[in-house]
Amino acid sequence: MSIQALTEMTRRYGKDPNYVIAAGGNTSYKDADVLYVKASGTTMGDITPEGFVALSRRKLAELFIKSYPKDEKAREAEVLRDALSSRLEGRRAARRWRRCCMRSSRFPSCCTCIPR
Image (cartoon, rainbow, N blue to C red; front, side, top):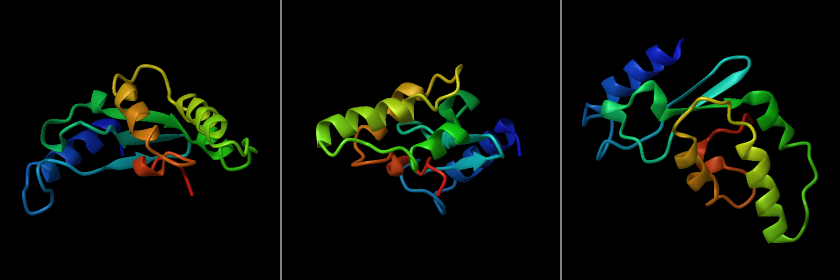
């Protein structure tokens, strides 16, 4: 699948009220190296390829083997920094993804962007 195919599929389902409520929802696609995630705050029915965040799966996987501080604030700051460093350059939606990740307690699981 390509980012264009993901965009077209997201638009198709995003415009159909039988599949989504209020044009919201999530779509993603992963290949061996990259995870593309629909950014929070983008509308499915009119999304463009720039509405997806491209993330390095290798860098995301490192979050699971790294030891983080026990102090909540320090841990949150470090996890956020590490998660944001997984973004691949050239994606405008990354700022929206950062806001979503800031709501998480350990990993940005609200975006379903961490390979499990």
